[in-house]
Length: 356
Image (cartoon, rainbow, N blue to C red; front, top):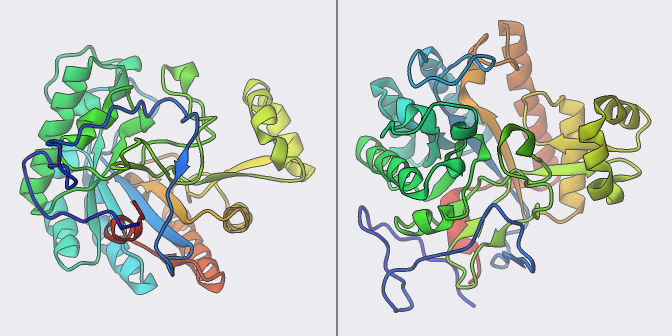
């Protein structure tokens, strides 16, 4: 078997290296695979972690969606965060959306780190702030996957091309904003050589707000297509507790009756833990990390929203004290990963080490 090639060709759709013209993937990423083909990695890869940052504009999470009126004040704080990551030996993946891609300051901070090989760049599509503006701005249409495919595709292509131009780097990873994939997103990604999609938030169901249901998707990375050209790399969420093996049965009841989840968690019976500093305590994260490692996840995908780097821009960090707690969460989690032998990885290394 061989590894997935890391191409450096830019701009044009990527030709299939095995012949046969342009590689077009037709998998429906919104649906769980019937028989998932889990990604295997080259010998010595072991278990790794990947830090992904949804690098986006600031907006009021409680207000209606709008294509204007957002802020980018937090972008200057990315410089400190990047230095922090370099101190930890972590190369973050900045999943950039349209407003950030237009920011000269973001290009200077993130672009310099990418050029130095200390960070990577990816694509994140927030359709309501991404041209062309042809759809009605609404909660339903905040999921790009609910738009007509040609409109989703055009928004993505404009963003992807702007990122390549402004950051002088080819993005190889994609995350749909609000995790809003469409049945045809994989085809769109294949056209420009995206090798990894990380839009699936396994064990979460967003159908109540017009979004996708990922509650039955695998947590481990899997090939989205039979030709093994596109890796689906779900964000890491685990079930913890004495009843965690029955998580698939319990989760719908917990969603339906909010008080039930708290009671089960206090009794040590059942809890859903996502690997993020946003709304997850460090104690919960360490328990979740243990489960993920013990379950043999080859890659633990951590994530957060970049506006959390500035107090008051998200519900998760409201003061400088809470920002200190955010950074302390990172320190403790990465120290624990180091003790457990889980090293940080990159998109480039994942592509290099994935066996095809």
